[in-house]
Length: 478
Image 1 (tube, rainbow, N blue to C red):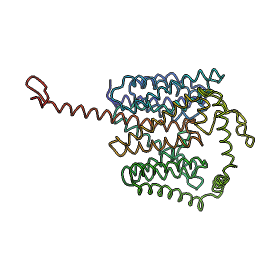
Image 2 (image 1 turned 135 degrees about the vertical axis):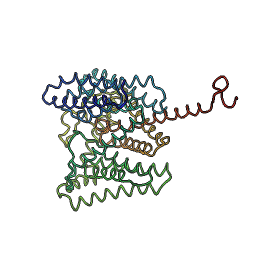
Image 3 (image 1 turned 45 degrees about the horizontal axis):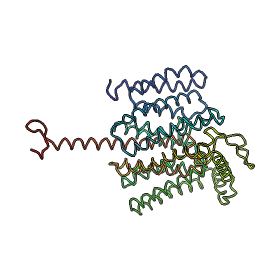
Image 4 (image 1 turned 30 degrees about the vertical axis):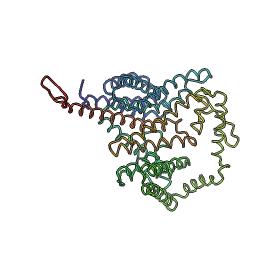
């Protein structure tokens, strides 16, 4: 076995990424099936050879190809790779050693949720649902469970640190992409290449929460924390999605509340709100007086409808979607009507939902309708346990960065739970992917802390004994 970080491992990783990109290129020409065998063989060998490198390869492939619905063959390849990693993770979980107790409970629920999601295929087929429709609905939830792969793959501190740095780079990159796509509204142009083909509503909340959490834990605002908050505010202010404003406002509110209640630092809580509000107001004023007139009018028209909230078309659509989902839930309250169900909304004032769709603006209503009480309870139990794991990391984390990660993950999870009732957070793989990243880093870090404590305790136990006349004897007995 070669040493960790050897040139052979690096070569395998580079080769894997190149083959995955070639397969993606071939998919557009319709001959990507020929690439799946060598890609699959390389993935299997890499998974057995180095779990951490295999996880990194998976994340690279997913970011590049997992959000491209037009590449059907690669969708299957990504799903097969996920299944491989899940099986290996289950084996490692069953033969674990030192694990944090909260992580054991959370990982157990995640594996149980994955098992239940597999069984929902039977419910879907019993209700005459197509396999592809079921897969489209189940995929975001499977992506959420990628967190458990982190837990069983990042087994050393260096691996975890590399993964945390990678998450930071990915978050910053997606923040830049968001601002680049929306920057024309205020005349801002960023030369960011389009490497990823999908976006996430959670990117601005993560950026803002992470920047503020870093500032809180370090006791001062650094260039990195300030840049993260500014990037998140820009992405939130420029978006035409009003739920994004709700999510960002909720992030700041939750952060200020946690600081006020847990830390007993009202001054810091007030500073959090003032700084975030000041950045948002500055961006709005700059846009109003320096940006293109057309985009400003579009934004003000979009938000002016909130004055008559009951007559707002988006609110009406959401109301009808929730009512339809609850009617379906009442018809099958235990198991639901099955993942893959296509809604047929009766919304007379818009033609957008005339065709069947699996989309619902409320996560809770959607999963009540499709998975019933059983599936919904399991899903939200996983999310609540994840929040508790984040709180635990803030308590036991020895470093400011650990506590900042726990605080960020807690805030983002709460935002996803509440904002998901206006814009779906758990029905889109882009959102659940980022949730999986932050939850997975929290879980794996808790395990590493537990292992470090066990190792320290073992050293202390060894130091309490010294050699006796006939071997080792406790000091007190000599």
